[in-house]
Image (tube, rainbow, N blue to C red):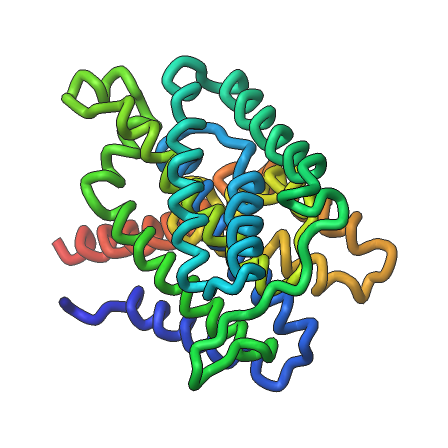
Length: 325
């Protein structure tokens, strides 16, 4: 495989992620962990929405399933490495079940169904005290200990989260570049045409929800030991809307879109805090301007600039070649 500029930029990006927390305080490292975790959740929603074209407002509910499952099992003495896959399997099964309404309803009707499911999970977490702790939540979840290396310190937990993030991103890259990824795009563009080409749209729709749900569950399983306290309000509908905003702002249907979108939603407000009471106004204004002038998100802005520069370079080359003739 030939080494290209993309590979160089990828290595530089990984290097930046490795050195970013060095010399920083616990709060900055915590925010970087949150960015990585929400990037994982947004990657899952991007597969469901951006690649497969299925609207979902329930990603926070799958974070809740993953977080509560991991919390309950680790508090019972299970290791995180064992508890996490159980939460992911549960998310996969529930995601498959949630995908069935998508076979019958689409558009805003599907959004209402997923919204109702998120509300249902929130109500169960709040009212079933015997299982979830109710409004008091669960606390004291241990961080993973791997014998030689412990993740009790904030910096060690960041690198642990980074490893999980890289693995999750690599798997997602493989999915979107595989025949499944092309089938997901065909489902998004025109379901009827995709079905006429022999694509099993029912199976793809269910898989889009199930795989996206697994990524939400993985993010939740990381939230549990990071914060070491979870309660129903952490997974309310507003958080599903935040994850949706990450996908849309970053660029739905682009691989790196959720990561940029999560940086805008999680990190940008912290950068703007020097403006004191005006940072939320500035943040909202920047998001509105972006959505008005470039609905395809930040990746879309970069693509438009690249295409414009490429077209100018190509036009100059054509003019020079014409002059030589």
